[in-house]
Image (spheres, rainbow, N blue to C red):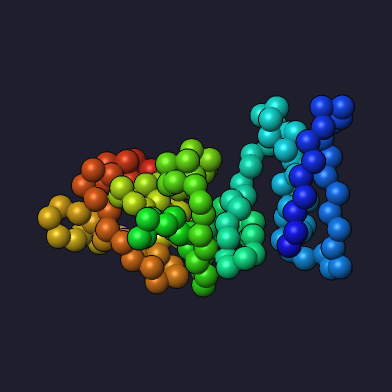
Length: 153
């Protein structure tokens, strides 16, 4: 998709025009995101979409579709039920925008609490976590207290 941006100080209010041959789910999500930008700035709406990349495509993911966000080989990956995507932002910047359903479980991983299948003890005081899509990771001792607080344990 080709994107053009024009900045003009003469505008009273920003606006966007989208030219497409088909109205796809991603274009609809982009429209919702752009239409809600003003509300977000005024604190009236909750931004619950994360822009990610899959190859050359930009995909807008709803927070509810995200299972895990993890740094692997110096790249931030976002995992959904059956796909993985890349994000250019570092993990801490993504974490700032996530809602209370997400909790950091290690230095490199954030999980969606609603996508947890099971939690079990692991080695050296850590806990093991398995998500509903089969992804697995460890909850480090450093983040175990925050994880338990998020689950009200």
